[in-house]
Image (cartoon, rainbow, N blue to C red; front, top):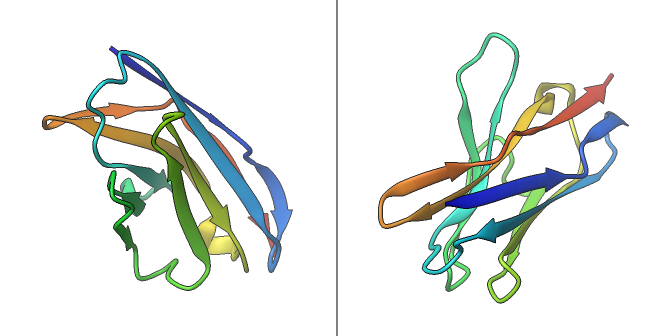
Length: 115
């Protein structure tokens, strides 16, 4: 099994910045794509950003130019640097990892952006 633990959430004012970190532990051999999803109140969970082992990245249109995803494959960590935060970025952010089609999820960390 793989355990994903997020850190770094909290409250920030609109226009501010915040960094989320995630560390994978357990049986981490062969983890491929890692990333972040989020779920706002009353909305479906959505992809924020993902990164492959070769560091190819995909971002949701809503965060392009504001968020940056990075990973340290050797340490099994993935981070999300969030800049120019908006109230609509308020959500629970989940770290995700994939191995051979199986998805793993962290418990999530709350990010609240005040206007």
